[in-house]
Image (cartoon, rainbow, N blue to C red):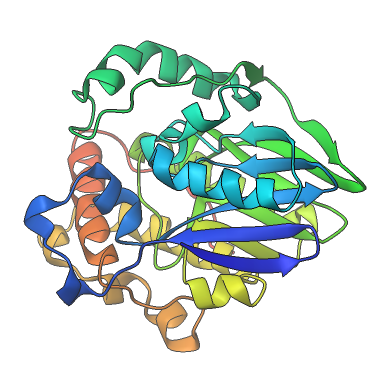
Length: 302
C-alpha cells in the first residue's frame, strides 16, 4: 500500500500494479484482473476528526489498512462514498459498517439485487464478498458533504456504469473520477450506453476542474496531483473508435495502439500491460453487442 498525499486535506491510497513477470495469472481472481493488476486507488478527504473516504478497495484487509491510517491521524468520524457497484469498489465496505455509507440509489439497488450471488462467490467467482454491506444512503440527485472546511460535491453520472458517482472538490478544482476515467483506458462495462457516456463525458469536462484523480491510473501521475482534462478527450476518442470499428472483420485482433496513438504519443496516458486484457474484453463486448444493435449516434467529433 502506498500513501500519496495530494494536499493538506486529500490523500490517495494506492495498491497493486505489479510487474507482469511477477504475477501468476493462473491464480488471479476478479480482484486481480479488475483492480490489483491495473493498480487501484481510493481517496480520503479529511479535516480534524472527520473523513470522507471514496471507495473501499476490493478487500476488507485493504480497507482496514486505510481506516487504521486515518485513525492514527486522529479521524474518528467516517463517511464512505461508493463510486459505483462493481466489486472492487465495495469489497471493503464492511470495514465502515458503523459509519454512514453513501452511493447512488442505482448502486444500492444493484447490490441488493445481486447480494446473494456476491456473498456466495457466484457473481464473479471467489473471493466472495461476505458480508456485503450495502450503502444506507441512496442518492437520486447531486449532494454536498462538508468535511471541516472542505466542500465535496457528490454528482451522479452515467459514465462507465449507469450508477456512477464522482466527487468534485470546487475549492481545489479537482475531480475524483472513480472508474469514469482510467489510464491506460476505460473498462467498457455497459456497451449499450456508449453514446450517452460519450455525451456525458463532454458535459463533465465543463464543470471547472483542472485535475483528475481516477481510481485506476499511474501512481506517479496521481502522486503529482493527477491528470489534466485531456484524459476525458482520450476516453471519448477511445469509446467512439471502439464503436465505430465494432463491425470490422478483424476487430478482436486490433491492439490498443490502433485506438489511442495520439494519447500514447503525447503522454496523456501510458501503456500498462494489464490493460491489454481489458482492451481485449472491450473489443469482445462492443463487437458482440453492436453485431445486433444499431451503432451509437455520437454526433460531430469535437
